[in-house]
Structure formats: structure tokens, C-alpha cells
Amino acid sequence: MQLAAYHEGVLPRTYQTQNCSIARGLEVVGDRWTLLVIRTAFEGVRRFDDFQSELGVARNVLTDRLGRLCDEGVMRRHRYQERPDRYEYRLTRKGVELWPVMMSIMLWGDRHYAENGPPVLVTHRGCGGELTRALTCDKCGVSLQPNDIEPRPGPGI
Image (cartoon, rainbow, N blue to C red; front, top):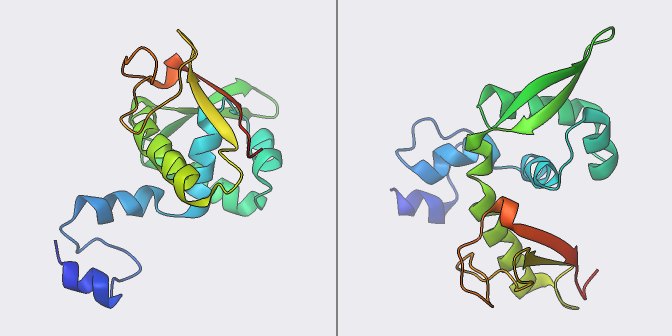
């Protein structure tokens, strides 16, 4: 990894020549709208218009991000209507593997930027315990996965 280049701020706009898995991953998920689309998909949103209204993102930007996520195999399109064709966007296994990353970013943001407390509390469906930095339940200690959790409004909402 070329740390000097990172510190000097000379990374090119694309990272194809970087021999770094972080840089290559950023090619796929490294912008704000992409991460928010993924977050919203984890919240259960699947349809284009629902993504657009939930996020407030321009339609052309959303079209681009969803297309890129589908091209990369992070999401897949599933037709739910014909005439006109309408599609849902669902996370693939590759997309679901981003859950630990998303939760880690959320918990980091809670620690450093949620002045009034977390806006969302992620709790274990099994016992009501809260998600820890190790992505375990603080009550029972079990390792949590996306289907094991229930988001609830937090004090910072």
C-alpha cells in the first residue's frame, strides 16, 4: 500500500492502478449516495421511487448508483411489473456482506457526531440488547447478522 500517496492527497480519481483492496472497494461504494442507497436497501426499500423519495436524491444520480451497484453484483434488479416494466432492487449476497461495514460506520458516527445520542438504536431481536462495536449483542453476546436486528428510534432522533 502506498501510504505516502494517501497522505499527500495525490490519489487519482479512479484507483485501477492502486494495488489496494480499500481503493478497489472505494471504486464501488466510495461515494455518499452509494452508501446511502445501500443503507436504505438494508432498511427494506426496494423500489426506485421509494429510494428517490426516502433519499431525496436526483433521479439521474439514483439511476447511475443503482445501475453501478447492479453491474458490480452488489444489488440485482427484479421485475415486479410489466407494461411498463418496473423493477425492485435487492441486495445480493455480496451486498449483504457490506452490513458489518455499514454498522461500523454508523457506530463510529454515533460515537463522534451524534451530540444528542444515536438517532437509531440497533437492537437484538432475540433479547433486546444493543449492537456493540464487535457486532455482537451487549446482553447475550451472540454475533449479530442483518436478520437478527431491529432498528429503533434513538435519543438523537
